[in-house]
Structure formats: structure tokens, C-alpha cells
Image 1: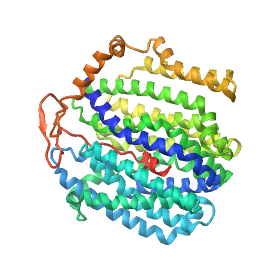
Image 2: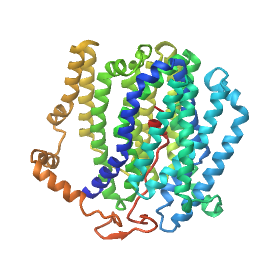
Image 3: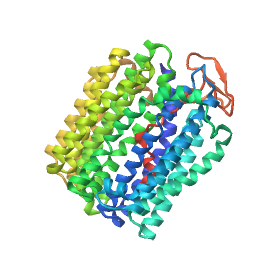
Image 4: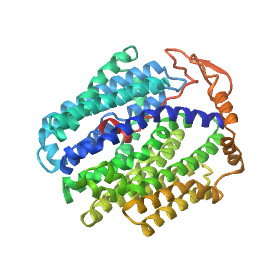
Length: 533
């Protein structure tokens, strides 16, 4: 069990590092963007960014999801899986972009409630860029080349931000600058990654293999699309009912809420391959339960802090006309955490092969989201949209739990989970009801409540005796350093450890072992958010 936790922690940390650095850069630039963009411009750009992601999910037909699963099937050739997946994705992305271009004007009117042909054409080009960039980065994860992933991702973020600042601030391009800066930089990196991976790529398709890939991947596409629609339809409804400016406020609230992705990002990237690699069902079930418990504990801590400090975060990092966005930050942060938890259950469905069962759950969640948005947004604005998002993810999680427990029962630690939620709810309620909403007193009081979270959680009896012994190591720095050295030592660059035991598996093909490495999931919802800030 400790070996699995170590792998989850180390791979998750490697992928999170790029996210942390890029988030820090992006947050530093938010005051600049919000002073050079009106809420309407910001809303238009964010609606189109979300539209590109939704279209990308559709045109890839589950190819990346199938790649991540088939690459390690013993009866499949991993080289053929990569080359056929790329060829299929290249042709569908190219065809999709070419088909959409002539309809740029009506598409912009449908999405933005006004003609914006130029913006729509840039977004259509971005569809091709985003789809292929996602696939090419996934190859680094298949090879567990964390350094290459980190360097590529961070370089893309830096180039994108530099170009975007030049266009938005220097050239006063507004929403056009945001879109063009993101996708022009991404296009350059796509071409570079095609060259880097050129020996593994092809434009020819193995039809028999493609049919097998689609049989697995296609059922995941409708579910993934309806799931992502929860982050997309609400923006369209806001545009239609209360205008682009309100959509801009909502988009900024989502941006601040995605601070929780610093925690969620590493988990989402490292979790699926590790979960699939555990062959013993009983061991897998116990491990899943433990991971969920600790993920909820960490996420509850982050959500509590963001919810309590939302007013001060927005005041510090956004122009005054964007201040009202704080009202939805806490709700959206909690909703994104529930989404991350739903990915645990989706992976369990993937383990059982019943990926089609995710569709009814996501459709039900989408229906709840649409109904609540239509009912709440006209009166409550972005707060209504936040409530709708949180409710829809709650429905999704509940239905997915029911489906997965019948197929693969997991002994979740309900008492410990309840303690996490209860402590977070009490602290948030105390802050909102008892403390001032501005000034140093309000800030200090909320920070005090936030840092009290781990203390109160421990006092509630959350920790097991084994966890208390493990945490006691922190009080002995020399012992902790020694254990870390043992933990990190012995991992050579030419071999990876078989998850089933202690034997070493020699890596081949530039560090790719059939059993010693595991593919890294790339969830569409992440949608390269860092580079777009």
C-alpha cells in the first residue's frame, strides 16, 4: 500500500509543480488583464475557450481515453496504439476545424449573442491546436517523462502569457488578444512536439486497431461531453439571460476557484494510471477508500480557505468592476472538488469495463444544471449559477456512487469523510455569520479560522493510530530526512519497479516499460487552464 501511495505522491507532485508555477504567474497577471479588459470582453473570450474544449471532446471520439487504457494491454502493440490514435485524432481535428470555419458568424451569434466572426475563427483554429496538444503531452505521461512534461508545459505557459500580454496590453486587442495569444503559442508547441515524437507518430490508421479503440473510447465521449457541459452551458445561459458582463464575472470567479486545481491537478493526472495498475481487487478497493479520505481532507482545507478569503482575494487581484465575482467563488470551488471526486468513480467504471454507465449519471447532472440555471440565474446571477453547478455535481457523484458500488464495492471511510465536511462547514459558517466582511479584523479572523482546520480535524478523531505515528516523524527532522532519502533513493533512470512486486522491469523504447510504467490521464476539464490566464 505504501508503494502505491509513494507513486501517487511522486508523480502527482511532478505534474503539480508546473501547475503551481504557472498559477503563480497567472495570478500575478490577473490585475493587468482585468484592467485592460472589460467584463464583457473577458466573458466573450472565456465562453469561446469553453466552447473549444467542448468541441474538442466531441471530435476526439474518446481516442485519448482509449490510448490511456490500451497502451498497457498485453495483447496490444503500444507503438501501434500511439500511432493509430494520433492519426485518427489528427484527421478528425483537421476535418472538424475545416467544417466549422464557414459557419464562424452564426456560431458566434449562437454562443455570444452577437456577431464576432473574427473571434470565432481564432477559436476554431484553437480547436485543432488544443486537441493535438493534449494528445502530444499525453505521450510524455505514457513514458513517465515528468521532466519533459514539466519543461514543455511551463514553457508553453510562459510563451503564451508573454504573447497574450503583448497583444492585450501593448496592442490593445482585448478578447482577440486573449484568444490569439493562447492558440498561436499553442500551435507553435504542437509543431515542436510533433517533431519530438515524430518516430512514434503516423498519419496512417490501422483500421482493426481503431475499431477496438473506438469500442472502448466512444462510450466515454457522450459522458465526458455532458460532464464538461456543466462548465459550459451555464456560461451560455448567463450570456443569454443577464449578458456578457455577468458572464465575465462568472468566468473570473471560476478562475479564482480553480486555485483548488493546484491540489486537484496532480491528483487527476497521477490517479487513473495508478488505480488501473493495482491488479488485486481487494487491495485496490482498500487503497481507493484511503485515497478518497485523504483527498477530501486536503480539498476541504483548500475550499475552506478560498471560501473564507474570497473577498480579499478578488479585491487584491482584480479591478474594482470585477469585485462582485467573489460571490460565486466559494460555491464553484466546492463544486470543482466534487468533480474531482467523480473522477475516482469514473476510473472505477473504467476498471470494470462498464464505461457506458457514466452517461446516464452525467445526463442527469446536466439536466439538473440546466434547470437550476434557468430558474436561479435571472434573480441570483452568478450566485445562482454557482448553486446550480454545486447541485449538479452532487447529483453526479451520488449516481456514480450507486453505479460503482454495485460493480466494484469500495469500503469508503464514511465517518472520517463526515468529519472533514463537518469541520469545513462549521468554519465557513462561523466566518460568514460572525466575522466582519472587510478590514484587517475580518481578514485576520478568517485566516485564523482557516489555519484552525487541521487542528480541529485532528481533535475530532480523524487520524488513525498508524497515521498519528507516521505524522510523529515530523517532530524528528533527522529521522524524517533519512526516511525521505530511503524513499527517493534507488529509483534508477533505466528501470522502473513492477507494481506487483520488487522485481525491476527494464525500460525500452526511450524509457517506456510495458509493466513498469503507467499512462497518465489527461482530463478534458483541465483544458490547459494555466496558459489561458
